[in-house]
Image: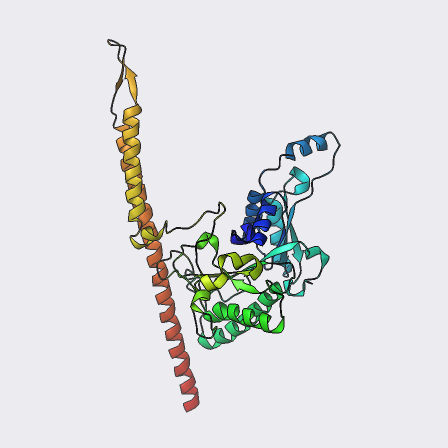
Length: 402
């Protein structure tokens, strides 16, 4: 959402950019690691929503039926990269299924699947001249996926893999930063390792600044995503990454083993200083930012997570009771004798309220049960890996003794 809508502030550059988008001038986007296409289709939906309905769509259809007129051109194109042949096929198939073609019905957004490596894409290619934002969700260790208990977590093997992944992620992020006209980048992983998250972010910022001097305003900064302004879990400061507290506050972390009711994720949002300066960038992290109609998370699920959904259950009961009361007031019949309308209470709405309460309670129990299952699987996984290491150590010791 932050990437599509942009930053809204008092600076002229920010206002001009936001105004141009609202008036219909839209930019192109890159999904650097697109397959299987879930993020790509979501991005297309957001861009389409931003541009609004096309008033000329009906006219375009009519003119095409008559054999007149030209097929409408998209105002925004999403370039979706995937280097693997099989995954590229899946990506192309899904885009055909989920994203209507501009040539068919006047859709303003087009997705162009590219069978190629994003790292080999030329930032100076005229094809990407109108690209203003890049979504980078590269391959990672997947260590945040807690509901996959059979994932191998061998420390020695994992350390080498994480190091290799971290190097690749850093190269990919720096390459995204090298596109001259791009002013927004979202970098994310489903990992909980610092090496793949904060370390990559801090190294990219430091190395790009050191090796590629920028003009005033072209420097990259971390900015707190608008739509997650109230999300409580933030990044880690200091450590290997060397991030300041203000920079860490701009980063988003999720932990499925600590009550977030989701798998582990990491999200960072970069913006050029020239478009983020009105909000103060990372020096004034998490200051209130104008939302421009963007739905904000404001702790709606916080209490439900803590209390196992009791808040939602109580709200459902309260709403149901209110509905019952309203229904009782509104339900009227005409008596034969008086010919006047009288309010007649019924038990139907009371049964509906009780039913809604039961459903909410069941839903809350299921949610709590799922979270407990995730924690149990994580503990069992740790035990299995511990036994495996002990067995391997004993076997190695026996071989040495022989």
